[in-house]
Image: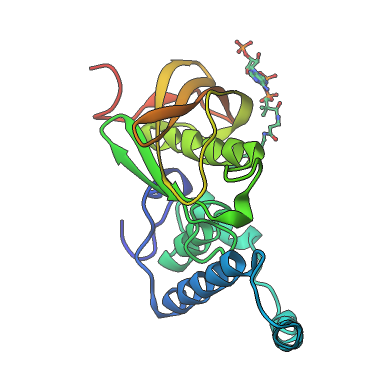
Amino acid sequence: MSESEYDLQQLPQSEPVAANPEYRERRRLAAALRRIIDRLVRVEAPQQKLTQWADQAEQWADDVASHPRRQQQPLLMRLWTGKGSQQDALDMGDHDIMTGLSAAMAPPLELWLDGDVVRGRATLGPAWQGPPGRVHGGVVALMLDILMAKCQDLVHGLGMTGTLNIRYQAGTPLRKEVLMEARIQRIEGRKMFVEGRFFVDGEQTVLAEGIWISMQEPYRWRDGHGPQ
Ligand SMILES: CCCCCCCCCC(=O)SCCNC(=O)CCNC(=O)[C@H](O)C(C)(C)COP(=O)(O)OP(=O)(O)OC[C@H]1O[C@@H](n2cnc3c(N)ncnc32)[C@H](O)[C@@H]1OP(=O)(O)O
């Protein structure tokens, strides 16, 4: 793909686009904020210190808010019509809610393709807690949705989650590496049926089945993928 020809359907969605100087700084900023979010949970610090941090954070928030937000619609249109730049591709991928390296909220979840399987890994801290010591079930659903949607990297067609069924088989612990995998079970016209699983220490903790609905064209496997 050349510098000026990024296409929404052909973005290497499973792997981050290489950062340019601007995005190196955005990623550094997000990484620092992630550490703060993680460490703030029940941090033991004198009240004076909390006051100092709150004052600094308020000042910083005001400074950030004084800058405009870049519009998303024009870059989406460029990517949709295959005319996106590297900057557009970075802007889309780096702000993904779970995988975005420039998204301070993102754990980040790392995804990659292994043949016809989407694999992932993430380690979540206490900010993501549901039951004590475990990842919140709603967060598990979010991680699954992002993981399983990436099966669209294997096909032509792009759409949204229609249905997601989850069986929580065991708690998914915090502070431990969670390994994930997703596979396309079958394609039926505009419907893509996907299965997702989480594993911790070799034990399966989650099993999910979902249906994605393509917005326009029927789903079909990309060359080199699917039943040969
Ligand atoms: C699009 C850009 C890509 C980037 C997206 C990033 C998204 C990140 C992940 C998300 O957060 S997705 C957000 C959560 N999902 C939604 O908000 C979806 C809300 N639902 C809808 O917008 C519509 O219901 C939907 C687009 C899913 C389907 O509407 P359509 O009018 O296109 O479907 P239609 O009624 O024509 O049905 C087409 C086929 O899909 C089936 N179907 C429709 N809705 C379904 C559903 N919800 N679950 C399962 N199957 C469904 C339907 O039975 C039918 O099957 P058959 O062809 O066999 O008859």
